[in-house]
Image 1 (cartoon, rainbow, N blue to C red):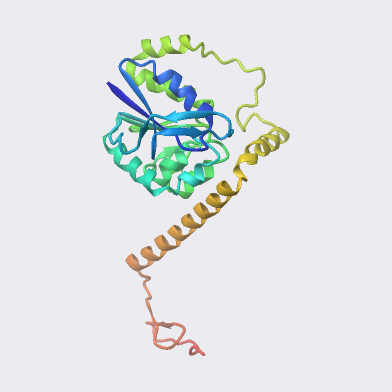
Image 2 (spheres, rainbow, N blue to C red):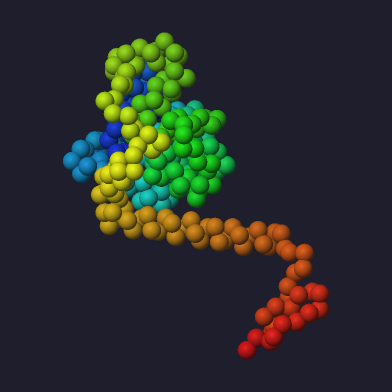
Length: 268
């Protein structure tokens, strides 16, 4: 059996997970699990759609495939140390670790994307850089080793079909594509920021913001930014210790006493 674990956290975006699920469940010998801290009902970002987490994270220590969806509650779960620890551990033995949309921010927060190319939803691309990843804004799927990330929401179908081809072969992937009749010809052509007008971008941002400004999500976003700022400051301090300047400074009751013998005014 090929165990496929979808991380079903509260506030996920439905299509991020349900689209890939419809593809990957059709792989030979697939065992699909929806995993969270505890088994039970999980509500999507709409507040209406509910799915069931079938297993706990503890019950799923070594899945073959991990898929993390995105959603407006991403900042909350990017600070969930239990989830991040599980991702680090499970990734070690997984054949594939994947994300859809802003789910890549959670992978990055777990330290899995450091110095790797990765993509995300267009609004969360900057967050990848803050976590040490190399953001890619012009590719729908980015593959680095056994990690695969996709752009926003609908790109999860592309990612899942790509994985299906890698795992089950091109013939099975094509059969799945036809089974779900995935042959997109959208009536509009504004599905990427490079094609959308300023008016469309503003309207889309407003749509996405209505969930992001919920108190819990807003607080988590602020705390996540604060965490990254502190980490950056500490990193710079460590570099100063490891790489002292050529003209080190001794503090002897003066503001600064350079080793060249010059002095500045004493500390008041």
